[in-house]
Image (cartoon, rainbow, N blue to C red; front, side, top):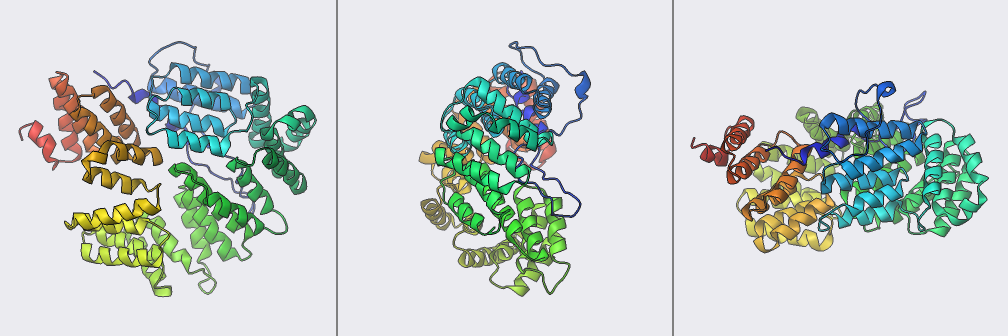
Length: 517
């Protein structure tokens, strides 16, 4: 028996992180307004054809190709065909809530609101999808539902502005459509986007203000206004909007990341000195998970040691740690601490390095110091609690997690850890954890564990397929797959999965027990 949900996950390998393009100099021509990532697969676009609208179990390559075809057509302004391709994909792929959540967001980002609604309507379990769907609505959706023809028309304008270097022509065409601009906030947003791309800041300001006047709840409109303001005479005015965005209750990690990236982009544009610009640019790339570009910008920021912002070294230490270059992480964290002993990020990285070496005494000291220096960031508090867990102080750890959840309702790690400690809250809190961070592998695996215990094997398979998409080399995935096969009477498949679990982690005792090793 094969996992019927696995193929649906492959669609998302065609999308990579947003990658603003560089112009003649390192940062003069950074473009921030393109919300759509580029496909990351090698496909011969000239020979491909659209998938037929039939109910089939799509293969890995078919799913990749169909999504890439639709996106390529969108970029080429063949928007009607793109719309139809995406609709076929939503209606024919194997049902999978995680897949629908991702598609719901991607469709809203390019203005296919009907398809976003269609994908959201297919999500079966609302327990872990409500946060994300609500955030998508709050961030992207217009106040009034567009007619399909208007939605397609505006998507064509958006495509030409964003991908076809026709911002002036496309915007000029749109503003002739006074009826649509009068009734649609989203049409005014698109006009503002086009004028910004054409460097007509006054006109961009006019239309984004009209969009916001019609729909003051849309956060993407506010984000674009900040990007417009930062191009004007008083770029720091944009920071007021960023502060507003940061105060909104955005529960899902993806939208928190978008807002943090926006803040760093605004600070980059507002900065006067090259070192400061490069520091904020490096931070922007860090939030976009473009780590190589982040390091490059931060290295440029540190070229003149006398003018280097002291925060550069702490951020470099974090990027190097996250990319597993631990020697450079240590070197930069020590530099940062020498320059500023109260730098919480550097202290946290030093704690991470100590914890990695199982030096829990020093790790606890660094994490507690980091938490004391920055009381607005729960990360150091979470790590403090985790060290208490590792050293057997479970009660102390639980007190910290409970304190975190009272102040930070979107801290998925705290929900996860409390779930494992308190069985009465286990399932509900695990669902909250993955609702906040849909890519949190451990949460999906533990949900699968619970469902296996309840003999709900189909639910367990779905959760495991998500975990496998996030990390196909997690030994626990194969162990739990083995338990499912064993329960369903497929002894050979069970044995194969237990062995594969041990290939990845030879010391995993539960798999050894199943194989009587």
